[in-house]
Length: 294
Image (cartoon, rainbow, N blue to C red; front, side, top):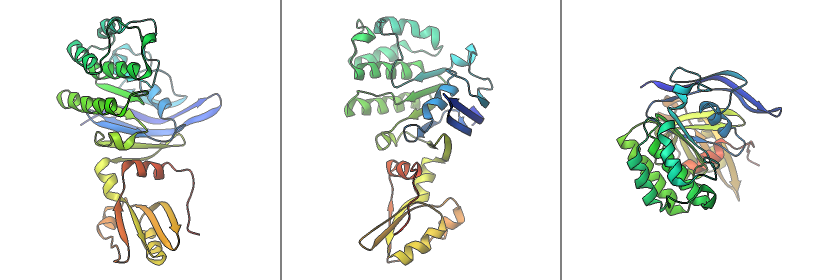
């Protein structure tokens, strides 16, 4: 499996604010990635650079070996669906779908019509006449039907209810299974979509704070509760993501990267060990505070 996207030492300032700092990462072909982090972490800026919407100040980004910015043959292999403003308000859904083959060589009109039916989107309506949820469903329709080798979704479901969002996840996975491609999904609704992800990048303060497969992350991270002395001894075995104490009960959220340390980890009988959801892990991994026992 080869890397479709390579990012090397990329930095970006916007209005004198350092948004990205020395980003280094890669995205392999035919893998579904989650790009996770708090608001302001730099996710959208990074996605704009990957998709050729803007340039970095320094460093290099390549998609299939080419810098995407102003490179037509690369740009038509990328579909980037943003949170909003993906389409001109004056255009009708019917007109938008007619123009899509010019932008996406792998466009599948039959799939697009199927998705319009599922999301109950009227062909004749203009974008300006759509609710936020309907506009998001149109973006999702285009993203899936584009079948672009690199498909990016940045919080694409604004205004969609839980049922419609679940439809999106299922339809995306179904189409990916039939037509694999690299998919990057930036989202805050992590537990809803966690079953989609194969690998995850966490961003914090404009940098990549962690990269793991979902299986590795959940295997290496857990919550341990117990007496303070036992908890403090376990804290030396890995990276403490969070600490808390309440009325004499102590707990740590521990991440152990070293495979040997993980294999030899012994949890005392006085302690309990619990698995964490991806949502909980994201909160701890992107927390700006350092916690300590008091």
